[in-house]
Structure formats: structure tokens, C-alpha cells
Image (tube, rainbow, N blue to C red):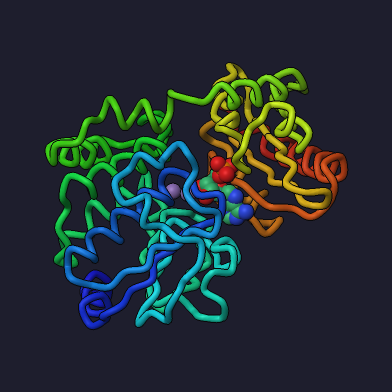
Length: 319
Ligand code: AMP
Ligand code: MN
Ligand code: MN
């Protein structure tokens, strides 16, 4: 049983390194904090690492201050959470193969020695909430806050199509640990800086539509003009995906002169993870991303062409 394998690996280790993906979302941050704190409680020496650090949105979580940008020592085992391939850790593991990978991406490449991958799970945090007690790890209030934040952010407030009655039951059990869901929900999804809204404004002003496809860009210039300090899209993708009567939304976020992050959102029935995976990225059928080489106009042209071709081929998936 994979739970027994993970339990043995954890309990036989004295020092444990934990990491997740670059530009971490709430699920990445929440899962690293939750597992990190639980292992510390089990008397392990833990290093929690995220290559891009913790965005302002999640710095209120107890334990967020423990996260570093690189590993300081050699750990007995390494655990990678909510991350579908080695590249996306941002190179923090150097050449080391992770001992355990825990994830819910359908595109996970199973790059660990032991891989616990549940593509139907709403979040890596919901997986941890279910599995941690089986590994002998206790969930206290701080851990519950991290897990619930991850679930709320990955399900966009229980709105994504993979939200089930079980996701809600897991969330309810976490609430029973004493966490304030209203506050966590607000911090994870609703409350945004003035700069974020300004940044959205630049993107929204360039919004385009062709049949069932909408798209826009966020350039480095937009980021600078808005005074936005993080490297992500400030969740503009979630806004694009709420436009009615569209099949797919694409957002291009310029990262440097020759690197663009692409985010796809699709309505149920379509599988944009297939497009992302074919370009070295990954994700879930309705939400996927990829990091591509090239200038913003180059990447935009190439991706729009591919996405339009995908939509033409999958016209029958519309419902
Ligand atoms: P995003 O568009 O960044 O919000 O990501 C949507 C989904 O795709 C999330 O589940 C991400 O973890 C995944 N994803 C985003 N970018 C990449 C990438 N470069 N490689 C693999 N998966 C990605
Ligand atoms: Mn994630
Ligand atoms: Mn996730």
C-alpha cells in the first residue's frame, strides 16, 4: 500500500525537505506549510522551500515565515507537492530525484520514487487532509488553515467542476479544527491590492474575442505601470474564465524578453491540459499552463493558432 510506503519513508527519516512549484498558488503554499508543520510536530527536522517564495496573498498563514527559497542542508528525504514535473520546482532539488511526489495534476510525470497522484482530487491540500492521518500525522488549527486555504484557492471557492460533496466534507472537517473560513476565503480569493486591480485593468483593456475564444496579455510594461510586484497574473485568469458563453480563455503573461507564461481556462468538456502538455506544460483538463520561450507577440501568435486548431477539432465537445 502506497500509504504504508509513505508512512515508512517519513518515519525512517530524521530530516525532510519539502517543496512545490515556482510562482506558487494557494495549493502549493498551503500543502508545503501543512505537511511541514505536521512533520515538525512529529519531531522531524523540516526544510520548507519554494523557489519563488510566498506571495503576499498567503503570508498571513501561520508557518508561511518558515519557507525559504533554497535548501540549506542535505535532507534524508525530499517530498514534492502539487507539482507535475521536476522542472517546475525551479531546480531546488538539483539532481536529486524526489523520494515522494504527492499531486493531483492529470499531467503528472510521476517523477518521484513513490508517487501518490490522484487526478480527481480537488487540490493537493484535500489529498493531504485525507492521507495525513493515515501516516500518523495530526492536523491542528494552523495546519487546517493552510489546508483549507489550498482547497479554497484551487477550487476557486468550491466552484470548479471537480468540487464534490467529499471536498465539502473535507473542508467542513477542517473548519471543525477551529479555523475562520470567512477570513481565509477572503484572503485567498477576494481581497486584492490596489495594484492588482490596476494590473487587471491593463489586461482587460486589451481583451479580445473570436468565436468561443477570448484572450489578452499582461506585459512587463503593464506590471511596471501598475506597480504590481509579483510575477503572476494576480488571478486575472479566473476573471477571464467567468465570461459567459466562451469555450476557452487564454492569458499571456510576459516574464522576460524571451519567456512567456501561458494560462488556459476552459469550460467543462474541453481538455486544455492536452495543449499545455504538448508544449512542456501541464495542468488539469479545465485549467492548464505552460512556460514558453519567445517574445510576447511570437508566443501569442503560435498559441492562438494551436488553441484555435484545438477548438475546431473539438467542436463536438461543446455542451
Ligand atoms: P495557472 O494557469 O498558472 O493558474 O495554472 C493552471 C494549472 O496548470 C495549475 O494546476 C498549474 O499547476 C498548472 N500549470 C501551470 N503552469 C504549468 C507549467 N509550466 N507546467 C506544468 N503545469 C503547469
Ligand atoms: Mn498549484
Ligand atoms: Mn493544485
